[in-house]
Length: 477
Image (cartoon, rainbow, N blue to C red):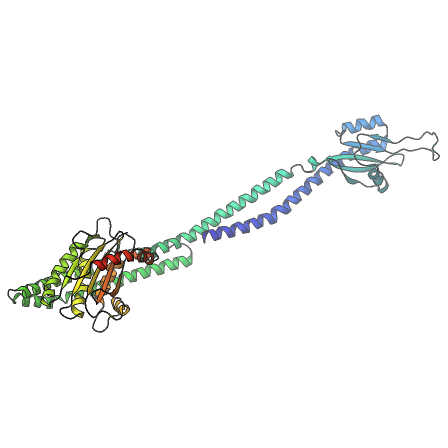
């Protein structure tokens, strides 16, 4: 918009300058010509009284010299008083004073017409002024007007006009640029405010300034931001209240678990109740937090994925032994740093392993594989169950469209965790014969919107090598 205003102003001002400067320049040139010939007429008029009195050559030369134009003025006196038969008489012969530049034909034509005329000669023009003599004959006064005198001051006037035109163009462009800044700056601030709000900085507001339309847009944006903050606050309070209602049944469960006595099953039940209480407390604190953390993890943030995998598999292994399930962990023997919070990765693994225990029969084997690549870490959770006939429908449940007794929150937790790093989640068939859930955790620090245009290329380039590695490490003992 700013450059559009500048271009329009430049075009309009240039047309106005051309429309006025060109005719004015032509008028100035014509005025300079008229001034030069007016001076020539005055010089010729200064000689006319002397010609009407005398035609003596010496006297006329002194008159021409006194006029100051002896080099540029000449006088052409015709012959008079000669007999018609051409014999000697008392008549006066024709005389020319000064340098003649005009042709004899032009001089004779002026004598015959009896009025002044101009003619072009080398280096300029001449003014031919007829003057009546006392004898009744017509003398012609020739005044030379050089081209430099005709164009005297024209170049300077045109330079002034060009400078004025350039100043007008520059001034109009500067004014248009300031007006454009006044219009564009509020729009830029509105865009920046929208980006900040989209990034989770809920305190972002836009100054109400600029043209009326942009002021109204800023007011509407600020009102929308206030409503978003209020809605999120209401959602947090609702989540906290709902989570707080779980404390009563959890207290009952904890008391009942305490009365189970000793044994692996009782200890496992008490451990599960304690973990559930911790998770409820975390949900309440997170929901009541007025400053959600939406920024990417900084340097050094995240967790050791191998340690989390070993810990969660240690928890689920007790239940796997009770149900007669074979299980295996691969790739968790060395530290693997990922830009994901420990609690988020643990929640994702619990959600996937919980689905294995919930949706497969007892005795079904499962495995967790951890693969560390150059720019990504892949976590594979696979089982030997019946598989998922429609992976897309399962992912749809993970996006909130739960059905058939499933809320879809488990896959949604996994998906949000992966996409927070720029990765993704995919469901396919495992080499164990059942379902394989692949979690792609990106390590290069780019967010999902930045990788969206390149993700397919990354997968195609790295998948063959990593797929071979995965297949070699999945076999159960």
